[in-house]
Length: 505
Image 1 (tube, one colour):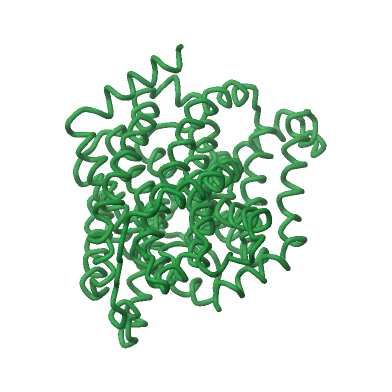
Image 2 (cartoon, helix red, strand yellow):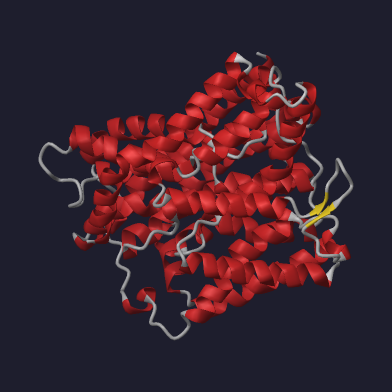
């Protein structure tokens, strides 16, 4: 009953004219970001962070806007996957397997509608799960001490990418790079400058917003500049949608797949560091194993588009559970949202629900509203959203660059931050060429300081005894999950490679 009262209060916050308008705008922009190949939810949220500061939005309004972009991008990612066989983002990769064959069969409209329904189902279930699970997790988290929090942060890095990770070594390298960036600046415990090279501007460390916008948004501009002479696939193909209303028997056919994909996706999402990519991958592979009796998967099976879309949208909502309840991001995009909360002087974690109920419950209420809005937008207006794929990047990238530079300068007023942002943009471009993931770097930058402070606090309390890291039952459970989550991809590597090979056929 108490949770219901809080949720009602959240709807009062979300249904104000300003916040409802922001949610609507966020859903539309998110769908556009998700549909455009290469951008995706993390880039979309990163691009709009400076804009939210420029508009002078309150913490609740800012989070409603960015979370709506997040959910909208998860919906939109399926559009380019189905129509062009180009994933709008990594979680949408599995949708290509059966989505594009449906397009080649002249059933693109059906595929888009079915995935819209599956996305709605998965996201709505995940939001309900967030309402029920997050407050309960908060009660458990209040029992956490420095030892448990340090183990939790390690688990977030060890499980990063889950079984969908392409290269564990590169993920570890990226995590270490992020943690190294987090140590730049004056050590708060000893007062000694670290890796600042006597540059005064670095004494306060590097603002994680500068890192995020540089790695995601600015690097995307450099990638565009590099490929500016290449012909774009979306300029060469005609986009034919066809009939968007599937037969009732087809809708009934995908219902069990949606349920299974949603359940598996939500479980994947609440695992810190795993995110929507794991949810999509697990949902598709599981559905294929139990439903591919006639060898129809990969040839345009409707269940092959419904399961991964329900899975990745459920995982997107599930990833908000550890972010809000524990202060540990469940995915790359929630890491960006976590950085936004910290910048707004809102402390994520167990006390968030007590200290800032308007922010957290307004956000959750806005997700319910956003899901309904997205369903209404993504089915009847899908033909119009597909036209977005025809917009040349030469018009989009200058807008991305302008928002990034103006936004970051508006936040800090420092030209030095702009130089650092460009440097991280170049670093992001280089890392992309080397196929090194950017999300672990972001997580390292955001969690590094908290990870270090909790380890130091634990060592001080226990007089430097390292065995204290396994001194409680909770920490032992977390370390066990960490170990299993880290070694699991090595045993599943063969299946992953076979799936990726099939994706590229």
